Length: 427
Image (cartoon, rainbow, N blue to C red; front, top):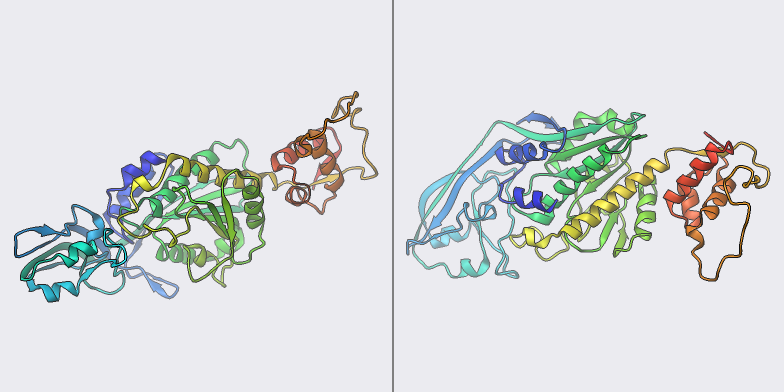
Protein backbone atom coordinates (compact mmCIF):
# COMPACT_ATOMS: atom_id res chain seq x y z
CA UNK A 1 0.00 0.00 0.00
CA UNK A 2 2.81 2.41 0.86
CA UNK A 3 4.50 1.70 -2.47
CA UNK A 4 1.26 2.31 -4.37
CA UNK A 5 0.83 5.69 -2.66
CA UNK A 6 4.36 6.71 -3.64
CA UNK A 7 3.80 5.57 -7.23
CA UNK A 8 0.53 7.50 -7.60
CA UNK A 9 1.66 10.65 -5.76
CA UNK A 10 3.21 12.54 -8.74
CA UNK A 11 0.11 12.18 -10.95
CA UNK A 12 -2.17 15.20 -11.34
CA UNK A 13 -5.79 14.16 -10.88
CA UNK A 14 -9.04 16.09 -10.97
CA UNK A 15 -12.74 15.36 -11.48
CA UNK A 16 -11.87 14.40 -15.05
CA UNK A 17 -8.88 13.93 -17.30
CA UNK A 18 -5.88 11.78 -18.17
CA UNK A 19 -4.48 11.69 -14.62
CA UNK A 20 -7.57 9.86 -13.42
CA UNK A 21 -7.33 7.30 -16.22
CA UNK A 22 -3.64 6.76 -15.51
CA UNK A 23 -4.44 6.23 -11.82
CA UNK A 24 -7.25 3.77 -12.60
CA UNK A 25 -4.98 1.88 -15.01
CA UNK A 26 -2.44 1.38 -12.20
CA UNK A 27 -5.19 0.22 -9.80
CA UNK A 28 -6.31 -2.16 -12.54
CA UNK A 29 -2.98 -3.96 -12.42
CA UNK A 30 -4.15 -5.75 -9.25
CA UNK A 31 -7.94 -5.27 -9.42
CA UNK A 32 -10.35 -6.59 -12.07
CA UNK A 33 -11.53 -3.07 -12.83
CA UNK A 34 -14.27 -2.07 -15.28
CA UNK A 35 -14.21 1.57 -16.41
CA UNK A 36 -17.19 3.81 -17.11
CA UNK A 37 -16.89 6.99 -19.18
CA UNK A 38 -19.72 9.42 -18.52
CA UNK A 39 -19.89 12.18 -21.17
CA UNK A 40 -19.60 15.86 -20.23
CA UNK A 41 -23.00 17.50 -20.03
CA UNK A 42 -24.75 14.41 -18.67
CA UNK A 43 -27.31 15.43 -16.05
CA UNK A 44 -27.09 13.55 -12.76
CA UNK A 45 -29.78 14.74 -10.35
CA UNK A 46 -29.12 18.47 -9.82
CA UNK A 47 -25.58 18.26 -11.26
CA UNK A 48 -23.97 18.11 -14.71
CA UNK A 49 -20.82 16.17 -15.60
CA UNK A 50 -18.18 18.88 -16.22
CA UNK A 51 -15.90 19.31 -19.20
CA UNK A 52 -12.70 17.31 -19.24
CA UNK A 53 -9.58 19.07 -17.98
CA UNK A 54 -6.07 18.34 -19.29
CA UNK A 55 -3.25 20.36 -17.68
CA UNK A 56 0.14 20.46 -19.37
CA UNK A 57 2.23 23.31 -17.95
CA UNK A 58 2.02 26.53 -15.97
CA UNK A 59 4.43 29.09 -14.49
CA UNK A 60 4.89 32.71 -13.48
CA UNK A 61 8.05 34.51 -14.65
CA UNK A 62 8.84 37.68 -12.74
CA UNK A 63 10.73 40.85 -13.68
CA UNK A 64 13.85 39.23 -12.27
CA UNK A 65 13.57 36.38 -14.79
CA UNK A 66 12.85 33.80 -12.07
CA UNK A 67 10.14 31.21 -12.82
CA UNK A 68 7.80 30.60 -9.89
CA UNK A 69 4.77 28.41 -9.05
CA UNK A 70 5.70 25.94 -11.77
CA UNK A 71 3.17 23.17 -12.36
CA UNK A 72 5.99 20.73 -13.09
CA UNK A 73 7.41 21.33 -9.60
CA UNK A 74 4.13 20.62 -7.79
CA UNK A 75 0.61 19.92 -9.09
CA UNK A 76 -0.93 22.13 -6.42
CA UNK A 77 0.69 25.25 -7.87
CA UNK A 78 -2.00 25.32 -10.56
CA UNK A 79 -5.63 26.12 -9.74
CA UNK A 80 -7.62 22.96 -10.39
CA UNK A 81 -9.52 23.22 -13.71
CA UNK A 82 -7.72 26.47 -14.59
CA UNK A 83 -8.19 27.71 -18.15
CA UNK A 84 -5.24 28.69 -20.36
CA UNK A 85 -3.53 32.07 -20.03
CA UNK A 86 -0.60 33.61 -21.90
CA UNK A 87 -0.03 37.29 -21.19
CA UNK A 88 1.84 39.94 -19.21
CA UNK A 89 0.42 41.82 -16.22
CA UNK A 90 1.39 43.94 -13.25
CA UNK A 91 1.95 42.39 -9.83
CA UNK A 92 -1.29 43.92 -8.51
CA UNK A 93 -3.39 42.08 -11.09
CA UNK A 94 -1.43 38.85 -10.64
CA UNK A 95 -1.94 38.86 -6.85
CA UNK A 96 -5.71 38.62 -7.39
CA UNK A 97 -5.11 35.16 -8.88
CA UNK A 98 -2.64 33.79 -6.31
CA UNK A 99 -3.98 31.76 -3.38
CA UNK A 100 -2.05 31.12 -0.15
CA UNK A 101 -2.53 30.15 3.48
CA UNK A 102 -1.29 33.08 5.63
CA UNK A 103 -1.56 30.94 8.77
CA UNK A 104 0.55 28.19 7.14
CA UNK A 105 3.15 30.22 5.21
CA UNK A 106 5.24 27.21 4.13
CA UNK A 107 2.42 25.13 2.61
CA UNK A 108 0.81 25.30 -0.83
CA UNK A 109 -3.00 25.08 -0.58
CA UNK A 110 -5.19 22.83 -2.74
CA UNK A 111 -7.47 25.23 -4.63
CA UNK A 112 -9.98 24.38 -7.37
CA UNK A 113 -12.59 26.07 -9.55
CA UNK A 114 -14.49 23.07 -10.87
CA UNK A 115 -17.69 24.73 -12.04
CA UNK A 116 -16.64 28.31 -12.87
CA UNK A 117 -14.07 29.05 -15.54
CA UNK A 118 -11.14 30.88 -14.02
CA UNK A 119 -7.37 30.80 -13.83
CA UNK A 120 -4.96 31.00 -10.96
CA UNK A 121 -2.01 29.73 -8.96
CA UNK A 122 -1.38 28.56 -5.42
CA UNK A 123 1.91 29.06 -3.62
CA UNK A 124 3.51 29.37 -0.21
CA UNK A 125 2.46 32.59 1.49
CA UNK A 126 6.04 33.58 2.32
CA UNK A 127 6.92 33.27 -1.40
CA UNK A 128 3.92 35.37 -2.40
CA UNK A 129 4.94 38.11 0.04
CA UNK A 130 8.46 38.08 -1.45
CA UNK A 131 7.33 38.71 -5.06
CA UNK A 132 9.16 41.79 -6.43
CA UNK A 133 7.17 44.63 -8.04
CA UNK A 134 7.07 44.89 -11.80
CA UNK A 135 5.69 43.09 -14.85
CA UNK A 136 5.05 39.34 -14.89
CA UNK A 137 4.60 36.83 -17.67
CA UNK A 138 1.88 34.29 -16.89
CA UNK A 139 1.58 31.14 -19.00
CA UNK A 140 -0.91 28.33 -18.37
CA UNK A 141 -1.34 25.60 -20.96
CA UNK A 142 -4.47 23.53 -20.33
CA UNK A 143 -7.47 22.18 -22.19
CA UNK A 144 -11.00 22.35 -20.77
CA UNK A 145 -13.48 20.98 -23.29
CA UNK A 146 -16.22 18.34 -23.66
CA UNK A 147 -14.97 14.85 -22.90
CA UNK A 148 -15.95 12.46 -20.12
CA UNK A 149 -15.59 11.62 -16.44
CA UNK A 150 -14.04 8.24 -15.68
CA UNK A 151 -14.66 5.94 -12.74
CA UNK A 152 -13.68 2.36 -11.96
CA UNK A 153 -15.79 -0.44 -10.55
CA UNK A 154 -15.03 -4.02 -9.48
CA UNK A 155 -17.57 -6.59 -8.28
CA UNK A 156 -16.85 -9.78 -6.34
CA UNK A 157 -19.98 -11.97 -6.45
CA UNK A 158 -21.20 -13.88 -3.40
CA UNK A 159 -23.93 -16.42 -2.70
CA UNK A 160 -26.50 -13.61 -2.71
CA UNK A 161 -26.93 -10.43 -4.71
CA UNK A 162 -27.11 -8.32 -1.54
CA UNK A 163 -24.09 -6.03 -1.77
CA UNK A 164 -21.49 -4.41 0.43
CA UNK A 165 -20.29 -1.13 -1.09
CA UNK A 166 -16.67 -0.01 -0.67
CA UNK A 167 -16.15 3.50 -2.05
CA UNK A 168 -13.14 5.78 -2.28
CA UNK A 169 -12.19 8.77 -4.41
CA UNK A 170 -9.49 9.37 -7.01
CA UNK A 171 -9.74 13.09 -7.79
CA UNK A 172 -7.16 14.66 -5.47
CA UNK A 173 -3.76 15.59 -6.99
CA UNK A 174 -0.54 14.81 -5.12
CA UNK A 175 -1.94 14.36 -1.62
CA UNK A 176 -1.11 11.14 0.16
CA UNK A 177 -3.41 10.75 3.14
CA UNK A 178 -6.27 12.47 1.30
CA UNK A 179 -6.75 10.31 -0.57
CA UNK A 180 -4.11 8.05 -2.06
CA UNK A 181 -4.35 6.12 1.21
CA UNK A 182 -8.02 5.35 0.52
CA UNK A 183 -7.17 4.20 -3.00
CA UNK A 184 -4.43 1.89 -1.71
CA UNK A 185 -6.43 0.42 1.18
CA UNK A 186 -9.42 -0.21 -1.10
CA UNK A 187 -7.21 -2.08 -3.59
CA UNK A 188 -5.67 -4.21 -0.82
CA UNK A 189 -9.10 -4.86 0.71
CA UNK A 190 -10.37 -6.01 -2.70
CA UNK A 191 -7.61 -8.60 -2.86
CA UNK A 192 -8.37 -9.86 0.67
CA UNK A 193 -12.10 -10.15 -0.01
CA UNK A 194 -11.36 -11.88 -3.33
CA UNK A 195 -9.43 -14.53 -1.38
CA UNK A 196 -12.42 -15.35 0.85
CA UNK A 197 -13.40 -18.94 -0.03
CA UNK A 198 -17.15 -18.54 0.47
CA UNK A 199 -18.72 -15.08 0.44
CA UNK A 200 -22.33 -14.59 1.49
CA UNK A 201 -22.50 -11.01 0.23
CA UNK A 202 -21.43 -9.63 -3.11
CA UNK A 203 -18.90 -6.79 -2.87
CA UNK A 204 -18.85 -3.72 -5.07
CA UNK A 205 -15.72 -1.55 -5.00
CA UNK A 206 -15.85 1.86 -6.69
CA UNK A 207 -13.03 4.34 -7.32
CA UNK A 208 -14.73 7.62 -8.23
CA UNK A 209 -14.20 11.40 -8.19
CA UNK A 210 -15.46 12.76 -4.88
CA UNK A 211 -19.00 14.20 -4.70
CA UNK A 212 -19.82 14.34 -8.43
CA UNK A 213 -18.64 10.73 -8.85
CA UNK A 214 -20.84 9.45 -6.02
CA UNK A 215 -23.78 11.50 -7.29
CA UNK A 216 -23.27 10.13 -10.81
CA UNK A 217 -22.95 6.53 -9.62
CA UNK A 218 -26.14 6.85 -7.58
CA UNK A 219 -27.97 8.45 -10.50
CA UNK A 220 -26.98 5.52 -12.72
CA UNK A 221 -27.86 2.92 -10.05
CA UNK A 222 -30.83 4.37 -8.15
CA UNK A 223 -33.00 1.26 -7.87
CA UNK A 224 -30.05 -1.08 -7.49
CA UNK A 225 -28.58 0.98 -4.63
CA UNK A 226 -31.85 1.16 -2.73
CA UNK A 227 -32.69 -2.53 -3.14
CA UNK A 228 -29.31 -4.27 -2.98
CA UNK A 229 -26.86 -2.39 -0.74
CA UNK A 230 -26.87 -4.03 2.69
CA UNK A 231 -23.86 -2.17 4.11
CA UNK A 232 -20.98 -0.01 3.03
CA UNK A 233 -18.03 2.15 3.92
CA UNK A 234 -16.23 5.11 2.40
CA UNK A 235 -12.44 5.04 2.83
CA UNK A 236 -10.82 8.44 3.30
CA UNK A 237 -7.59 9.57 5.00
CA UNK A 238 -6.72 6.07 6.24
CA UNK A 239 -2.92 6.14 5.92
CA UNK A 240 -1.63 8.19 8.84
CA UNK A 241 -1.43 7.03 12.45
CA UNK A 242 -4.28 9.10 13.84
CA UNK A 243 -7.03 7.34 15.80
CA UNK A 244 -9.22 5.00 13.77
CA UNK A 245 -12.51 6.79 13.28
CA UNK A 246 -15.90 5.48 12.23
CA UNK A 247 -18.40 8.13 11.22
CA UNK A 248 -21.83 6.59 11.65
CA UNK A 249 -24.25 6.21 8.78
CA UNK A 250 -27.17 8.63 8.66
CA UNK A 251 -29.35 6.10 10.50
CA UNK A 252 -26.67 5.57 13.13
CA UNK A 253 -27.79 2.11 14.26
CA UNK A 254 -27.40 -0.03 11.14
CA UNK A 255 -25.67 -3.39 11.19
CA UNK A 256 -22.42 -1.93 9.84
CA UNK A 257 -22.50 0.80 12.54
CA UNK A 258 -22.92 -1.83 15.27
CA UNK A 259 -20.11 -3.89 13.75
CA UNK A 260 -17.81 -0.85 13.67
CA UNK A 261 -18.47 -0.25 17.38
CA UNK A 262 -17.76 -3.89 18.15
CA UNK A 263 -14.55 -4.15 16.08
CA UNK A 264 -13.13 -0.83 17.30
CA UNK A 265 -13.95 -1.65 20.94
CA UNK A 266 -11.77 -4.77 20.65
CA UNK A 267 -9.00 -2.98 18.73
CA UNK A 268 -5.65 -2.27 20.36
CA UNK A 269 -5.46 1.01 18.41
CA UNK A 270 -6.81 4.39 19.48
CA UNK A 271 -10.27 4.83 18.06
CA UNK A 272 -13.44 6.86 18.20
CA UNK A 273 -17.02 6.83 16.93
CA UNK A 274 -18.46 10.10 15.60
CA UNK A 275 -22.03 10.97 14.61
CA UNK A 276 -23.20 11.45 11.04
CA UNK A 277 -22.58 15.10 10.14
CA UNK A 278 -23.86 16.23 6.74
CA UNK A 279 -21.80 19.45 6.89
CA UNK A 280 -18.44 17.66 6.62
CA UNK A 281 -16.87 14.40 5.53
CA UNK A 282 -16.86 12.68 2.16
CA UNK A 283 -19.23 10.68 -0.02
CA UNK A 284 -21.11 9.13 2.89
CA UNK A 285 -23.11 12.38 2.63
CA UNK A 286 -24.34 11.35 -0.83
CA UNK A 287 -25.03 7.72 0.08
CA UNK A 288 -26.79 9.00 3.20
CA UNK A 289 -28.88 11.64 1.45
CA UNK A 290 -32.57 11.33 2.39
CA UNK A 291 -33.63 9.77 -0.91
CA UNK A 292 -31.17 6.89 -0.43
CA UNK A 293 -30.39 6.78 3.32
CA UNK A 294 -28.04 3.85 2.73
CA UNK A 295 -26.26 2.05 5.59
CA UNK A 296 -22.88 3.51 4.64
CA UNK A 297 -20.41 5.10 7.07
CA UNK A 298 -16.95 6.63 6.78
CA UNK A 299 -13.75 4.92 7.92
CA UNK A 300 -10.81 7.24 8.42
CA UNK A 301 -7.90 7.84 10.75
CA UNK A 302 -7.26 11.56 11.11
CA UNK A 303 -10.64 12.94 10.10
CA UNK A 304 -10.80 14.80 6.76
CA UNK A 305 -10.39 18.50 7.45
CA UNK A 306 -8.95 17.99 10.93
CA UNK A 307 -5.23 17.39 10.35
CA UNK A 308 -2.73 20.19 9.81
CA UNK A 309 -1.62 19.33 6.29
CA UNK A 310 -5.13 18.60 4.99
CA UNK A 311 -5.55 19.90 1.42
CA UNK A 312 -2.00 21.23 1.26
CA UNK A 313 1.41 20.33 -0.09
CA UNK A 314 2.22 19.03 3.40
CA UNK A 315 0.18 15.90 2.69
CA UNK A 316 3.15 13.98 1.30
CA UNK A 317 3.92 10.24 1.34
CA UNK A 318 5.97 10.93 4.48
CA UNK A 319 2.70 11.66 6.30
CA UNK A 320 1.39 8.12 5.80
CA UNK A 321 2.99 4.92 7.05
CA UNK A 322 2.90 1.21 6.45
CA UNK A 323 1.59 0.78 9.99
CA UNK A 324 -1.16 3.34 9.44
CA UNK A 325 -2.31 1.66 6.23
CA UNK A 326 -2.12 -1.80 7.82
CA UNK A 327 -4.23 -0.80 10.82
CA UNK A 328 -6.91 0.63 8.56
CA UNK A 329 -6.89 -2.43 6.31
CA UNK A 330 -7.09 -4.79 9.29
CA UNK A 331 -10.06 -2.88 10.72
CA UNK A 332 -11.95 -2.76 7.42
CA UNK A 333 -11.36 -6.47 6.83
CA UNK A 334 -12.44 -7.40 10.37
CA UNK A 335 -15.64 -5.44 9.82
CA UNK A 336 -16.30 -7.38 6.62
CA UNK A 337 -15.45 -10.70 8.26
CA UNK A 338 -17.88 -9.87 11.09
CA UNK A 339 -20.57 -8.96 8.58
CA UNK A 340 -20.03 -12.29 6.84
CA UNK A 341 -20.19 -14.19 10.15
CA UNK A 342 -23.46 -12.47 10.97
CA UNK A 343 -25.04 -13.42 7.64
CA UNK A 344 -26.17 -16.77 9.12
CA UNK A 345 -28.77 -16.91 11.88
CA UNK A 346 -29.08 -20.11 13.92
CA UNK A 347 -31.87 -21.61 16.04
CA UNK A 348 -31.80 -24.37 18.65
CA UNK A 349 -33.45 -27.55 17.40
CA UNK A 350 -34.46 -28.53 20.95
CA UNK A 351 -34.45 -25.35 23.05
CA UNK A 352 -35.20 -27.03 26.38
CA UNK A 353 -32.30 -26.62 28.83
CA UNK A 354 -28.65 -27.19 28.02
CA UNK A 355 -27.80 -30.23 25.91
CA UNK A 356 -25.30 -32.76 27.25
CA UNK A 357 -22.24 -31.42 25.47
CA UNK A 358 -19.88 -34.26 26.35
CA UNK A 359 -22.14 -36.71 24.53
CA UNK A 360 -21.82 -34.51 21.44
CA UNK A 361 -18.02 -34.37 21.90
CA UNK A 362 -18.23 -30.60 22.26
CA UNK A 363 -16.43 -30.57 25.63
CA UNK A 364 -14.11 -32.90 27.51
CA UNK A 365 -15.77 -35.27 29.94
CA UNK A 366 -13.25 -34.31 32.66
CA UNK A 367 -13.36 -30.77 34.06
CA UNK A 368 -11.16 -28.86 36.48
CA UNK A 369 -11.64 -25.60 38.33
CA UNK A 370 -10.57 -22.47 36.45
CA UNK A 371 -7.72 -20.52 37.97
CA UNK A 372 -8.34 -16.92 39.17
CA UNK A 373 -7.79 -14.31 36.45
CA UNK A 374 -8.50 -16.53 33.46
CA UNK A 375 -10.17 -14.84 30.47
CA UNK A 376 -13.69 -16.18 30.34
CA UNK A 377 -14.40 -14.59 26.95
CA UNK A 378 -11.59 -16.66 25.42
CA UNK A 379 -13.00 -19.96 26.71
CA UNK A 380 -14.63 -21.99 23.87
CA UNK A 381 -17.14 -23.41 26.34
CA UNK A 382 -18.29 -19.90 27.25
CA UNK A 383 -18.86 -19.07 23.57
CA UNK A 384 -20.72 -22.34 23.12
CA UNK A 385 -23.04 -21.69 26.06
CA UNK A 386 -23.85 -18.18 24.85
CA UNK A 387 -24.64 -19.53 21.39
CA UNK A 388 -26.81 -22.36 22.70
CA UNK A 389 -28.78 -19.98 24.90
CA UNK A 390 -29.35 -17.10 22.51
CA UNK A 391 -29.58 -18.85 19.15
CA UNK A 392 -33.36 -18.77 19.36
CA UNK A 393 -34.14 -17.58 15.84
CA UNK A 394 -34.55 -14.00 17.06
CA UNK A 395 -30.97 -13.11 18.04
CA UNK A 396 -28.11 -13.12 15.54
CA UNK A 397 -24.44 -13.54 16.36
CA UNK A 398 -23.94 -9.77 16.46
CA UNK A 399 -26.61 -9.53 19.17
CA UNK A 400 -24.80 -12.24 21.14
CA UNK A 401 -21.40 -10.56 20.70
CA UNK A 402 -22.80 -7.30 22.05
CA UNK A 403 -24.39 -9.07 25.03
CA UNK A 404 -21.47 -11.32 25.90
CA UNK A 405 -18.25 -9.49 24.98
CA UNK A 406 -17.15 -12.79 23.42
CA UNK A 407 -15.25 -12.18 20.16
CA UNK A 408 -17.32 -12.68 17.03
CA UNK A 409 -14.96 -15.29 15.53
CA UNK A 410 -15.29 -17.41 18.70
CA UNK A 411 -19.08 -17.21 18.51
CA UNK A 412 -19.11 -18.08 14.82
CA UNK A 413 -16.84 -21.06 15.46
CA UNK A 414 -19.02 -22.26 18.37
CA UNK A 415 -22.17 -21.94 16.26
CA UNK A 416 -20.62 -23.93 13.43
CA UNK A 417 -19.56 -26.68 15.83
CA UNK A 418 -23.01 -26.81 17.41
CA UNK A 419 -24.61 -26.91 13.97
CA UNK A 420 -22.38 -29.80 12.92
CA UNK A 421 -23.29 -31.62 16.15
CA UNK A 422 -26.99 -31.35 15.26
CA UNK A 423 -27.89 -28.85 17.99
CA UNK A 424 -28.59 -25.83 15.76
CA UNK A 425 -30.41 -25.34 12.51
CA UNK A 426 -29.88 -22.46 10.10
CA UNK A 427 -32.91 -20.16 9.93
